[in-house]
Length: 269
Image 1 (cartoon, rainbow, N blue to C red):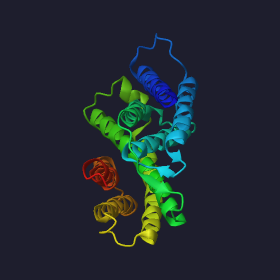
Image 2: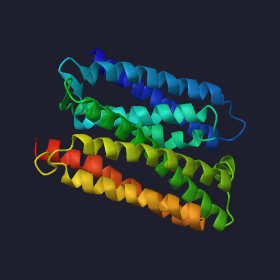
Image 3: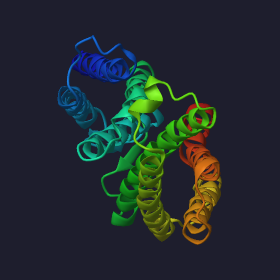
Image 4: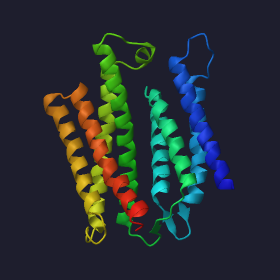
């Protein structure tokens, strides 16, 4: 019962925060809406309740419960937390229009379809490090992919010379691109650490059912690495950067959650 109450409270806080951010962008100026500080505070309140929820659901006596929907909820928590911390100093709060509703959906799915998949307490330090860096890498690259979507919308409107109220509220295109590559660069470093730590405990990828995850993760790493190299050497930007970012992100999603869904939800392993 407590778990359900915390989940629904978190969902309400996330949806409320996302709605306020949307209203601040689209509502007429005559409407008096909560300030940016109040909006972010509401988001942090949601993260706090989400933390309590995860503590009771993920950190169990047998070990970390990283079942499919628990992992999805933990990832959404990490993404929202990183987003809110970034929003304190950078103009990225508009990403919340997408982030908060998606986080609310992951919580509902976790509540509706509970799953169990333990990472035992006796797991090696390399495995725990791999899980942590993977989660941070996926979260940062999730932020980058949403930033790329907003950048694509902004670029399209500017090309058509129809910058609406939503577009005018976004930072300049160059600032948006700079933020995008800062996220990708940090996420790429973390993804590299995740792959290295993963190979430390990897014994037999076929026996451990990790071949698809490993191959796709390396492919995703290659895509983001190529994008960063193209940015440094050839000045890649705009649509090229957007396409490479979203392509790399889709590959990583298939690598982790795609393989995890097949193993846990379909094959029941």
